[in-house]
Length: 88
Image 1 (spheres, rainbow, N blue to C red):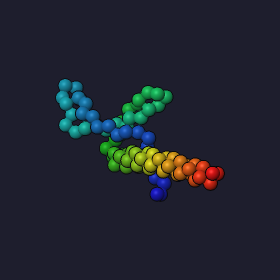
Image 2 (image 1 turned 90 degrees about the vertical axis):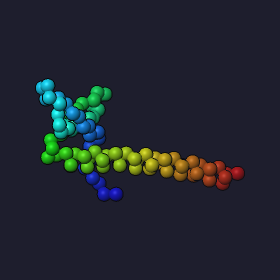
Image 3 (image 1 turned 30 degrees about the horizontal axis):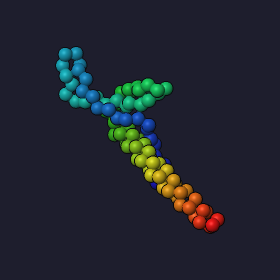
Image 4 (image 1 turned 45 degrees about the vertical axis):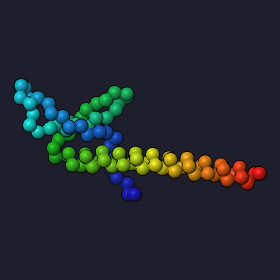
């Protein structure tokens, strides 16, 4: 559970045309929401591995946060039940 660099974005693979010729290799873009609108930012091949790792770290963080909230809600419910049982 060490802190990691994260990017709140999705990595998108696109095969865009270069003129009339379709691309053989994909181009990669970061898709993220800014002020309610999606923006795409090109990712250079040299940065792809690091960007992919940062996006994966963010998704894992979000999943862990979701689980944390679920556990916290369950504990709060149990605590409420215990308090009610003691007040009887």
